[in-house]
Image 1: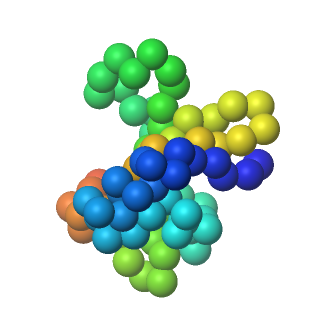
Image 2: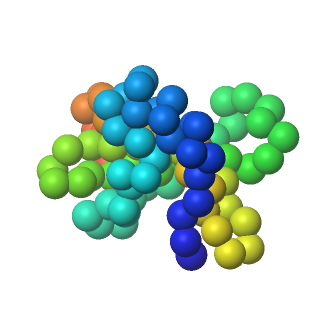
Length: 87
């Protein structure tokens, strides 16, 4: 699958979190992925927690037949990483 994203959303992510969606190339190992049911997004959304170069990150995304649409990419808090790495 290939990653796609809205360039304006990528720039907003860069301003908010310090890097754009175009920076995401995958995690070092298989991440922990959960369905994001915190709100009614009117689409199935997922959050993956994993490490890149030893640091915790979270990526929010949706999946279509041939693409993964990136929504948000940020550093994860260590508390989040501990919670999901136990899964």
